[in-house]
Image (tube, rainbow, N blue to C red; front, side):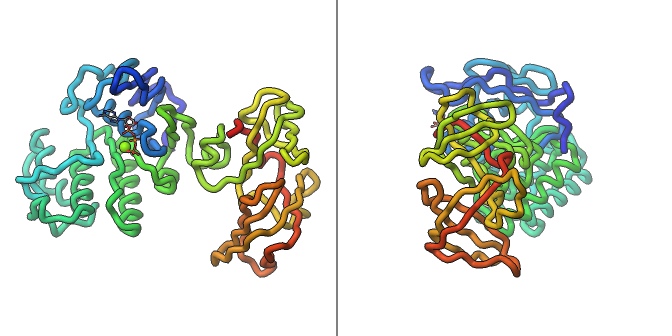
Length: 367
Ligand SMILES: Nc1ncnc2c1ncn2[C@@H]1O[C@H](COP(=O)(O)OP(=O)(O)OP(=O)(O)O)[C@@H](O)[C@H]1O
Ligand SMILES: [Mg+2]
């Protein structure tokens, strides 16, 4: 993983804001610092400001407020083609009058790379995207997914220090997508390329990135390595957006540094880890991951909290069983249990006990 603790930031956003109409901020006070070589993904719902951030970094949009720096230098006034950035954008077209190989060779010619070297680099880039046989075609003779792969190859062919990619794998089928995810991260790490990657596919974000910035409403809601985002969401938006999540509503009754007491809306009292709550009386949404809930509550030891639940639905999924329960008056509580020899299949209507450890149960902001 890239070292995020050094002071040598390669890409920096400092208090960056963006408004297109002079009224509404679509990017609000963005602060971000990336070390060289990091693979960072911007993940978030449609309209949350991801492309706008990339466009400002590329130089196609200007920030309304704040500063963007590359390698320590402000770049607000440097035009896009002088920033030395490789880009694949949602609608970033190939040159239609050039063949595929010429499209790839072009950024190398601009950089005065010799012919033999150019040919080797073009071949390597085409092989990476599994398009080695298509060098002589024109873009119009390719499918949408093939054009996308060529655009990707063109962004990487000159081995830029910084690459920006906006949904570069959107048009590809699952198998090719997974292959390309692997190729992109490998190449980026091998060449020490700093990458800002945009997607709204959370699996892609979690598997490819050193860190993920979760966007919502023009703000970074949390910026953390994938495991931390999943295990330790800082607010309800992130808990809901990343992975599957159970929620229960309640009110804070007691609060300490490591533990708080929550009265659920059906009157039940449970312990939780206080994460995004501040005082007694605060409304809270409790968050618990499905796989942290045990049906065999004896396994958890004495610190476990147990609750009564009614089985609503049992879904056989092969490697796991996914069971929907009614808990504390809500019937959308999901648990996942591994399909093992001793794991019984629960029957709808059955009354069971479920349990979890207080540290796996996070008291977040009320939704
Ligand atoms: N050129 C523009 N002029 C005016 N408003 C714009 C422009 N580009 C984007 N917006 C608005 O800015 C907001 C953020 O858009 P942006 O394209 O950055 O979102 P996004 O996170 O990339 O979404 P998606 O996942 O759908 O691509 C949206 O409300 C959008 O309508
Ligand atoms: Mg976008």
